[in-house]
Image (cartoon, rainbow, N blue to C red; front, side, top):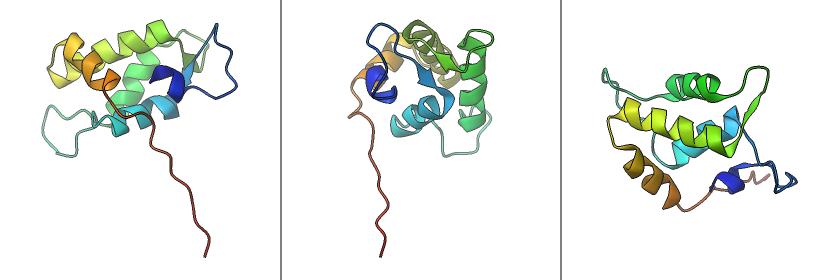
Amino acid sequence: LFRSGAPPAAPAARVEMDSSRFLKLCRECKLIDATGGKSTFNAARADLIFAKVKAQGHSKITFEEFTRALDLVATERGMPAEDMRSLVMNADGPLLTRLVHA
């Protein structure tokens, strides 16, 4: 799933994910809460977690940073990290959308 969120031309040795793809993954895995409670995990929190785990001076995260980000998302959502990993691993993959011009 991480690999599918990376650009198609990324070399296998160093696969990275940018913040927009991380946010897309969070949305598609239904990690972003639609409710407005105090413990809401929203797009802003996802962006903050992404910024927290990425290396300084870089705009993308590695797989290792991605796994740390998932652990932080799990903490934010109040669930075990292993459950979070399972949820993401069992996702269907990226949703592909296209515009149809009439």
